[in-house]
Image (cartoon, rainbow, N blue to C red; front, side, top):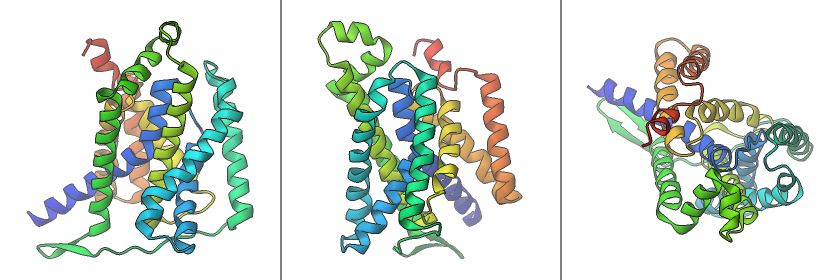
Length: 288
């Protein structure tokens, strides 16, 4: 019984990680039809913001949960104003621009921090379950992913801004005709997506460490999760993260971490073969 519970915790943890790193990308893609290929570097920037804020004397919780999202949010605002705002509705150009931004950010971070992995120490103890121990920070990460998902759901479906943003997603011209500032809504959405990436980087920094090249791993997993989930920024991402998290973690526990990565990719290919428009197309097609 104990081992089954530990196994379940590991699966939920994997789903939580995929959810955290994917939510920002999913929000920008689902609401704006923009694929930000620099999303992994945004997460990395959040990790470095946490490390530098901690070194500057900030409380580690403040560094993770406040400073990291703020720093990446400001950076996202700058990028939106300088680059993204000129590329709305031009998916290929946006992908090329953000790919170039990804390379530039990787180079810049390497020049500033070097090519070594840095981290921040945070130990909140373990929780005994029979003869096993569960890392307390893993439970905090799961809790953070759940709270973040609930807050995103509340903003999207329980606030006026969320309703207007979803209307702009479905018909930008009609929303503009009703007098709503679509460009400003897009700007805010992109910044919020960046802040979610920064939050993910801050929370993951104590567990994985951060290097200038961490973004490549994070964008790969986030991209697979978002594309498999489809255009529903929250429900599609959660469904995709759930399925891929179960498949990859089960494979890792039975075989190896390398096999887990391969299994995740195969599962994503199968899902895309079954649902070319993503998992969310199931309920979107049925009108739910």
